[in-house]
Image (cartoon, rainbow over all chains, first blue to last red; front, side):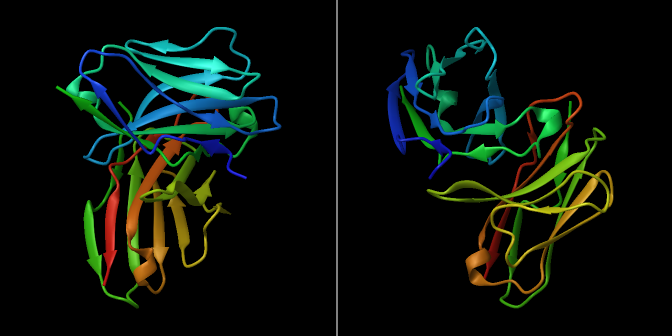
Length: 118
Length: 113
């Protein structure tokens, strides 16, 4: 079974509108971390946002917010006021276990390609 | 800023060649990782290392080996390259003591002909 599921292979959004990228995860470990990375056409993976399993509030970083619904095991990324530069691949990832006590590697979803239309 | 540098952005090799992909990080991170990225499959872990000379297999280690002789350098080796190893290879590093996220290099697009 997949540990990280991103059901949207591709999405379009109009410039200046908000968009939600879906991510569901599967783990039995009570301690885990959830990440979103952006990969533009240049190839580099850019860290966007992090949510810990014990965090009470949803994480926010500028125009990015993570809609964390623990009971549903979902960690959707919300991008507000989309910009043309947001066009990229977006990957959801999970680290199982607390960082110091785990392997530290991230398990990635298959990604969502976001295209922002002018 | 943390910098993870991969020696080549593009590589073209022939079937059967021995291929070295080099990765260097400048933040004294203990953990280093090699991922392979293929369209529609996301990133898959090949190998990782949590200390010098230590290595652990990831999800898809077959056909690969690694070397970590110094803390800052983690090399991925394809002993005898095959066409099904044509892919994007991403190196990452992280510090288990202080950091949650991984820092990635720009990737090496390897084509095996």
